[in-house]
Picture (cartoon, helix red, strand yellow):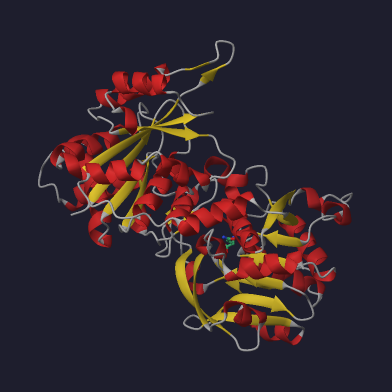
Length: 532
Ligand code: GLN
């Protein structure tokens, strides 16, 4: 008997709907309920895997290999549950599946329509999330804002769910903005009233309002919102601006949102256990020292493109009570002749090269890696960062000047990184990377083996190219240590360097598994080495 919380948004985007959904889920979990989360994105791409980070920010990858919206990263970090392929539903996915069924003849001669065929498919995805995970409560966030053309069928499906389920089985939270007008010094409720009216025009009645405000609203404002929006006063929740996002669940908890929802669901109100989270908030608010780490990427103006990496660095910092300050370095800038690397990395105690695709900026990243290797600065290379670390080693230690990845140059004599055989025949770009969990065996007497404290690990992947085994022996003979391999496919997963305080490159993305209360071992060790 799954219960459903739906989180919609109105007035403007960027109100923190994802954090609100995550906070609600965290609070319900803290009261002993099994929760699962889902995000609906109304765009027509099947998944964000083929989108430019400038459009979309980071692509988050679930353990089962689903390329998803970056909000899923917030979800996993807040609720500390592994989400799966049912967690991110796009219009692209819904439409492809309906069209595939139509071609197969599944609709038995019917005219295939938005209602009921598209809406049935959407409803199926909501119910599937509950059924496949056995969750007590599924929290579904709808991307975009109410009134967008794209999300109409999604909201219509939710209206049908509200209608076909019992009143105590669904709960709708609408996130809006209550702006403050300078001059008249007032908080304004009209945008929220209009947004709720838009929602009601679609047949959906919100059960609670979460209002983004610069400071707590007054009772009078709550009364007004309650009257105009038909939401009881205590169900009007303030979402006050914060500098530490981890405070948000506690702020909602203080306004009893979790009790309100459980009461509505007629579920027992078990005691909330928020101890770990409260400690986390304390830690984050009391970080004394600071360490600077350089992140060298090509989308550094858009921090969302590296959000899980930035979060993972912060998590490791919390463990050592240190604030990690990121020195965002644009890899293309490092390619200029005139660049002074010493100046760029002047205050950076560690250098990280994250994942990436395409040729732009790679020579700058390689320069940064040489700098880290030669100057014994702690280095962590993730996915493309690991591939480039191997290329750098082949160029500057083995002396293969043209060493590269065939992603950038297909005619080089030294393709140190190359396509796997099974990737060579692929023509579709979407969903065909090596994705999700693969096992990695850590080799004896390596730094990585020591860091993890075990010899088998599961990490999430998202790449097409691989370490070229033809060069393995030669690289190893010259001091590159292969410390992790996937035995099934004989693939190199982790490399490290001798005689260096910390130099690790991994083919997978450890950032997807880091949690604020449980930093990922590699980030932990990297930040620790950088502090030292
Ligand atoms: N572009 C590289 C590949 O496809 C690395 C991908 C990544 O960094 N996520 O293999």
